[in-house]
Image 1 (cartoon, rainbow over the protein chains, first blue to last red):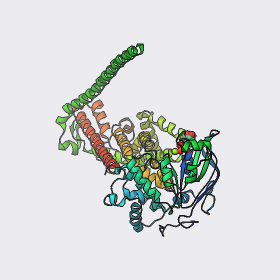
Image 2: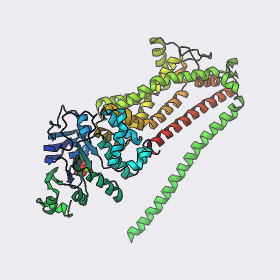
Image 3: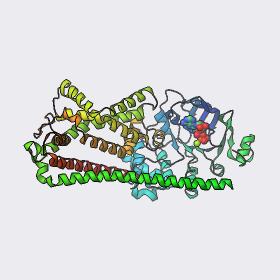
Length: 269
Length: 291
Ligand SMILES: Nc1ncnc2c1ncn2[C@@H]1O[C@H](COP(=O)(O)OP(=O)(O)O)[C@@H](O)[C@H]1O
Ligand SMILES: [Mg+2]
C-alpha cells in the first residue's frame, strides 16, 4: 500500500491511525452546529455516522480534515488527534499534510473537469510523487476500486464523461492515490442509483483493515452492513452532538438512548 | 365550486398574459433582428463595391476617398496587441485576486469592485483625455500605438475583470472543497483546476473586450492618433480602422463609400474573432466535459 516515495512525517504504520476527538465544537458565526462531541474512531475499522439531516455530521467530518477552514466564519474548538500524532485542531498545523493523510469523498462525485489522468496527476505532483511513478499509482488505485478495466483505454478522456457511479469510484481512487491513513466519506452513495451504490459500498467495505474509515450515511441498512462501529448524531439544546456510539451490533440491537432507539428502528428523525 | 371557477378564471388570465408577453417578446426580438439586418444590408450595399484585395493592402489616397486601408489594418492589429498584452494579466489577475484571495463582502473587495464598476461607467472620451495626458505626456510615449493600446487597456479592464469574475463565481461550487480535501495549495487549485475550468468564460470575456476595443474611436483619437503612414513600430502613431471610419464620415466629403467598406472590414474582423473564440471555448468545454 505504501508509496515509498511519498514523504510522510509522523506517520504511524499504515492502517493504524485511529482518530481521537475530544470536546469538539463547531460554530458558524454565532450558531453552534456541534457541541461537546467526543468520539474515538478506531484504527482500521469502519465507523458509521448516522443521524437526521442538519445535526452536524458533515460539519464533524469537515472539522477532521480542516475543510472547515475554507468556510468563512466557521470556528472549530476542541481536540483532534490522528494516531499518536500531535494535535491537528488549532493553529500551527500543517493543514496540507494533514489532508494528505486524511482523504475525503463527498456526497456528489466531484472529479475535476479534466482528464482521468490529470485527476490523479495534480494531487500526486503536489505531494511530490515523481512523474514516472504516477502511472503505476493510477493503475493500482483504479484497480482498487474496480475501475481499471473500464477506463484503462480512456485515461486521457474527460472524467466528467463517466457515469455517476464511476465518477464516485474515481474520487475514491483519487483519495487512495495519496496513500491516506484515514478516509472520510460523506454520504458517498446518496447521489447514486441503487446498482452503482452497491458497487461503491462494496469497495468501501473492502477498505476495512487497510485504512480507517468514517462514513456518514442515511442508509441504516448500509451502516449495519459495512460498519464495525456506529455513532448516532442528534440535536440536543439546538446543537448537534453524539448521543450514542459503540459496536454496530450492540447499538443496533440494543440502543440505550430513546431518541437513538427511535431513529434506528426507523420511527423518527 | 367557487374555487374551481376562480381557478379557471386565473388560468384564462394567465393564458392571456402568457400570450401577451410572448407576443411582446417576439416583436422585440424581430425589431432587434431587423435593426441588425438593416445595418448589415446598408453596409453591404454601400461598402461591398469598394471591397477588393487592394482595399486590404494598399495605401489610402486622396484623403481616403481612394485607395485602401492597409496601414489602418496593421495599426489596428498593433493597437490590439498593445492593449491585450497588459490587459489580460491585469484583468484576469485582478479577478483571481478578488475571487480567491479576498473575502466577498470585505471592505477591500467592495472598494475594488466598486472602483472597477466606476471605471466601467466613465465615458471613453475621458479615457482618451487621460491617455493623452498620462501615457503620451507624463510617460513620454507620445502619440503612439503603444499609448493607444494602453489607454484601451484602462478602458476595457472593467469588462475583463467583470467577465472573469463571473466565470470564477459560476464555477461548480464543489471544485474548491475537492481540491482542498486533496491537500492542494491555493496556487495549485487556482492555476491547475479553477483557471482551466473558467477558461471558456474568460475567453468569451476577452472576446467581448476585443470587440469593445476594436469599436473604440474616442479613446484613440488623442492617443494613437490618425497618422495614415504604415507603422514601423509601436512607437509610431497609427490610425485605427474605427478612427479612419470616423474621419471619413465626418471630415471627408464623398467618403461614405470607403467608410462603409472600412466598417464592413471591421465587422468582419469582429465576426471572425468571435467565431474563433467561440470555437475555442467550445473545444475547451468539450475536452473538459465530453471527450
Ligand atoms: N457553511 C455553513 N454556514 C452556516 N451554517 C452551516 C454551514 N454548514 C452547515 N451549517 C449548519 O450547521 C448545521 C449542521 O449542518 P451539517 O453539518 O451539514 O449537517 P448534516 O451533515 O448532519 O446534515 C445545520 O444546521 C446547517 O444549517
Ligand atoms: Mg451532510
